[in-house]
Structure formats: C-alpha cells, structure tokens
Length: 293
Image (cartoon, rainbow, N blue to C red; front, side):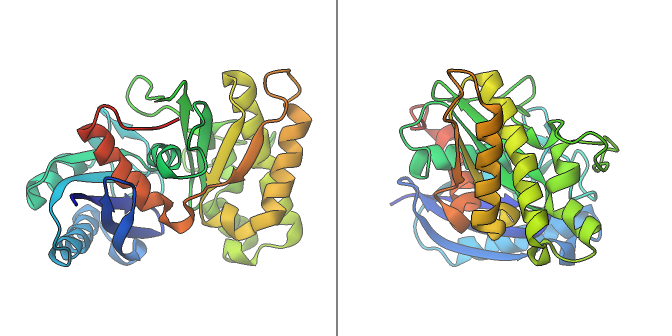
C-alpha cells in the first residue's frame, strides 16, 4: 500500500512517520526541537536528517510529504513562522523539503492538520461541524464547518490560541495580553510555575480548563458547532481535571439553543494525532474526495 511521509514540527519535538491511505501510522521517529534550534539552518538540517532516515527505513512506495507546522504561515504556508520556534521566520519549508527529498510537499498549520486527522479516523468521524484544539507548547486550532476545513484569507483560520479569555492576563509571544496562548500554553505555564507544566497543581489544572472552556464556548456560540476535540501534552497530561473544568465552563457559557450541549472531549488519535494529521494534509491534497465530517 502507498504511504505518505508525515512530518510534525512543534516547539518541543520534531517527528516524522509513515501514514497509509487508511489513516494508519505505520512507522515514526522523533527528536527534540531545542537541541537543533540554534539557527534556521541547523533546525532544517535536523529535520531533513530525521525525515530522510524515516524514508530510508521504509520500503513501501511513498507518494508525497505532508507537514503539520506551528503557525502562523504566509502564502498558504509556503512560508512558515512558528511562534514557538523563533529561528524560523518566513522559512520556505515547502520548497526546500520537497526539493531535498524529491517528493511533492504539502504544508499546513499543525492544529488544522489535527482537525483533518480527527475527522478522518479520530473523535470527529461523521461529525460535519467541530473544532480541533492543540494545548501544548503553544495553542492552536482548526475548524471544520459543513464538512470543510476553514482556511481563511491566507490559510490561518482557527487560531483559537489568540482568542481573548482573561482580563489582565499575561502577555503572549507577540506582547498581547489576556489571550489563551499567553495564559494556558505549556510555555506560559512553565514561566508562571517556574517548573514543567506536568508539575502543575490541581488549581492550575482547573484554571487551564476554565480558560480553554471559555475559548471553546466563544467559538461554539459564534460558529454553531457542538464538538471540540482537544489534544496536546498539556490538555491530555492534565487529563480528567482539565476536561471536567473545561466542560463545566462550556456548559456555563453555551446557553443558546444551538450551542447548549456542546461537548469538549479528548482527541481520539492520542499521541498519533500530529503525524496522522500531517499525513492527512498530504492525502487531502492528493485526493479531492478526502473524507472529513
């Protein structure tokens, strides 16, 4: 069976793997981002080495590359500028990776990629209207309405990490105060706690759930959707405490007839989600009938 090379680029780790046409992740490898992020070229060299190694270890036909990368991007993600990877600003990832590996390359925001993956084989299968959210080193989102992934003017639709949730909240990487990413991302929590997010106390875990719940409720009320699937090391690591707090907050703010009952649930793909989502970016580009919603 044919596969695509799936690549996930995040502030914590770089990952690559193989995804077949049924959404199965058949091989994967990863390495820390920070070890290679001394400058733009060092990071790219590490990514290229990782991706090349996966290709060398895999015998099945490979038809394309799909990449999920932290945002934002420009020119439909021809150029990428991940907020949590400051050495890459307007980095031409699509052209370079495709040329160096000799394959067609398709790039999208990592949270939009997750939205594709969750609608393909995850917790949103058969659901035509939903949001997918990643609460990890940063916070991103992708939104599917009427079975179509929202793109926006330049491919950046769904940046839920930049929804206002907390008056007087701390500043994010862009200096804006009170936005979700500046208060609830892994980066923000590490700064606030002086320790890794995994060491957060119960009250902090509850508060992160409240903040994410506020954002989800705002999106549900605005866009008439009733499901949010949430992934990422912070949300999944905080587990039931996070999800109970987030759901209670959604229930408190989703009081319109169409938004009442909105659910916030763990992403169905778990730790496979980023690479299955990246694979979905490629399969969707190759197949106009790609199934979501």
